[in-house]
Length: 283
Image (cartoon, one colour):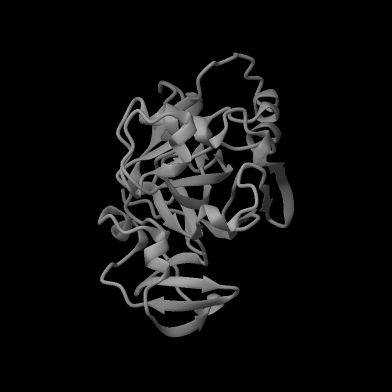
């Protein structure tokens, strides 16, 4: 099954480095999923014009999810680097605002209220394909449409309560506009030999900061979906960010700055790439 993208003009099928326009009545992949169309049926649609991937203006694969769930402390090595020693039987789950979604090649904005400690987190992202309520772990993969790449961008001073007079707030620190870049495509499960063992790399300003395999996840993908569905109904197009490995910036004080670049690569999906710039202060 080819990889699928959302472009500024609709939906495309990605074959190698060529995007073929698909003749569908949907503005994006999220809208197709929400209408009950499987990605297999999307990919089978008639094709139109072709363009090089490098010349195609992409949007986030699902620009308007109803929910973005994210997993914290999902890799043992990441727990060690941030000195989080608590043992959890269940995944630690939190919400990011859907309005934080951004596309590959777009700009991550350093928020005017908290520009100094903005961090990156490269992650494998689950895209839900059909409604899931209290599903069993053994059945969970049946509810997954595919995977994309995400960057759980985080203002650490807001997240950790480092700003004087303000409480720590995980969701608020991770929900600024542009703080959830995703893309470049959705890859369906049948494209992977083993989606539980994918290589992930994060490169910031030319320096490789993160390198892990998804087999290092503490909570398997099926467990994450099943657990989340026990607390909230997942609907087609919902997003679950599975957590980040070690190598984030905060422990070394290596935060994103104006003109920084971030590339996150996951095998079988591609590369999510963004630049960084200061947001415009509207005061």
